[in-house]
Length: 306
Image (tube, rainbow, N blue to C red; front, side, top):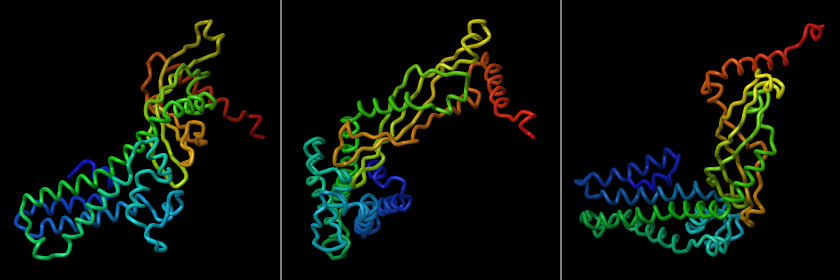
């Protein structure tokens, strides 16, 4: 199986199983219909993943949608493929800013699927194909399908590349602006020393929005006790880092840095390693004392019970 097509079908168990079954047909060398069966399964696979990647109600809302079939409720394969690659981003942006030739990609995919269709109607000319012809057709089909995956990946990577500095700045600004409860509860005080954004991916492109997910690490200084405690030698400080994730969006009609928006409440910091005991032994007692102080502060006094 081709890794690129496996990536294209993604988390769909049905589509992955269908692809596996299509490839398995090719292994049955004694079956004179082995390529015909492969062709039928692959043609149906293309129909399923294009419908999943390009839902009707999303495609028709795109600014570039023209209803090329001329039929209400009937989308062209080229329109679905275009949406799968770049969602609601305009053809001009995709061509001029990202350098993607979506028409060429569409033509290759269309030609491959049309070619597959020829072998699903069993005639003498397409029955019991010689092995070298089967091999050539399988390569042609695989490369056409994989080309759609490569275009999707290229589109998203290029957008992230264009906006990565703005995404980094937006993530850093939000981390600095928010009180991070999961860190705040670890010590008496904390100070953020450094913030690194080391990964950004596009999770989805709809008809009107590009969705990003960014992740990285936050370097923090945890302080136990007050400044006076530290001066007396009764407090302590420790440097630690935690992974974080957040989400951002920008509109498809203006995919530029100035239009990036940080999604409210999306910032999440993973402090599990601290709670699970991945910390220096010398700070165990201090941490336990701090937790006890928090519990005491939150507990009602005797006077509060009446």
